[in-house]
Image (cartoon, rainbow, N blue to C red):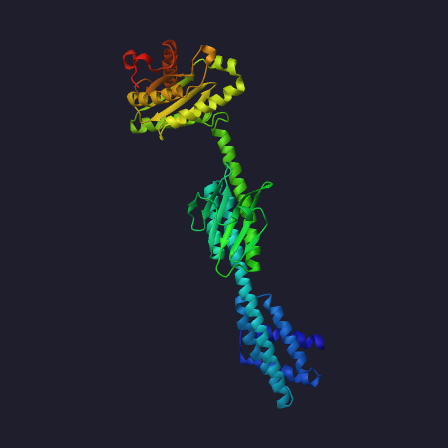
Length: 432
């Protein structure tokens, strides 16, 4: 019989949760009379009512729980009032029930508030991981991380990373790039796990086996234990995202940069040359290609060795890069040959640029005594201009190479323009 009355009461509670009608309350009243006759006490009924409620809570939205508590209280009161008990006993049971319901409601409210906070945190983490998963750009990765840190903690601070030169570079939570040294003792704090000092929280970003950065946060009133735990989780995701972006940038650099000189490699140079040709054709612009070759570099290598030759290649590449304009592109063509692409530049303008390159390399006074006492490394340069000298990439390279060949034949250490003998002067005739 006990199982039957519990099932009957649970069914009435379910019906009343869906529709609050007097007919259901009447049925509950009739059930209560039967319970009294069978000796089921009010405490038993209250206990089962709360257990039944907990079962119903699992099947409904958390937002409906407070309403269900209040509604079920009507049903419970109707059942209790039908008991053939004294008024005092009824009041005692009622008071206990109300107190218990109030306590339960307070606990439920606190649980709902905590749940809402957790849901918000998980939503931000989910959004951040989704954005980071689709991002391979290091700067954009840093800005995604700082934006979500600001949303989660409502604080100041930033994300600081160690670049390839071992220098710190920061992105504040306001997404401002900071090139100066990190604040306070961040560098020291980054060598620890998590470091909480007053209102400052520092967490390392372990990339590979080393600390490659840190999250630095500041908040009035400091950070709670839950906030520190959450920040550590974010720092872990951030480290993985930064490491992936750095690996991608390294791979991209390897695919486009000549490892020996730091200039663009041959393959990427050809891609850039194709783009520049397409742009010049579309907008009917001109551009000039320069081919540069180090004079007597074989003699230099034979005299000084290939290791020193590699260092000298790096030095000359650096001189080229510092001598051309910001819009110009420098690349290594192969061996001791280099290429310079000069957008929207005619032959006369290109001659001025390449003369500066030639002169700066000569003035660097890189000793090449294998060619004779007092001899220094020099370069010869050939120029060809689109569309004046060529209509295709192949033709342009051949024209510049032909001009370079003529520069070598004319005595080296000179700039030669393709096919126009009256558009160049020998090195002795130049005025510096």
